[in-house]
Length: 263
Image (cartoon, helix red, strand yellow):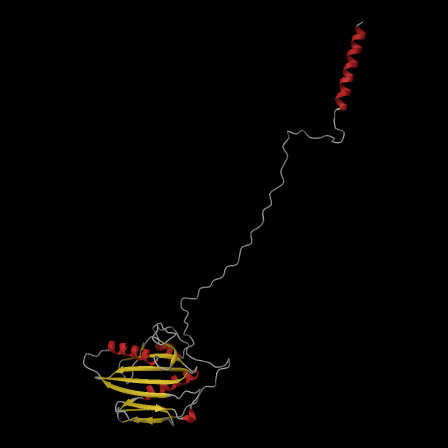
């Protein structure tokens, strides 16, 4: 009897094992338990490529007027200004107007002595110029038609006017600024004038300023006005020339200034 009971128990245990094995999925062998954590794939981040940086600032000592003729570079210590139309606010101007990419050959001058008896002055300037001394307070040299370049004749003038005892170097500066502005009021479509700079004339205290103008027909004109305070008199020297030859005629201006004497 006991043997039969043991046999039945073994049979039932065998049936239970067979039933459990038949319930497993044969396509997933050795599947890991679901509660075991698995490692996630590493995060991949795009590498940021730095953008190039550009320095658009100019050096502190940069000088927009660095193309100016050497003499003007030494003398012009104030910041230049120029205005686009007559009577407007001045802003910087270029020293030379070039008609083509190839600069024109420098002019070679022959100098001659001139005497302005009505002003009590003598000096050297370009030879062959026409003289106008018809006014008691003025002496003018004009370039003859045969020597004119770029449709604009050179003109060099001196004026001496009496001033009162209250007239000072500050008064001179005011008059010079006014003269530079007034020159651009007639015949010019554009007008530009530099600030004034200190420079002696006839060994007397004075100031000068440069200008650039474009006439209604497109002609470019350059020039310099220089004033000096003599004893009770105001001396004004004015050089006006075609713009593309500005550097050449600033050389003439320097020669006149160096040779100017009172008689």
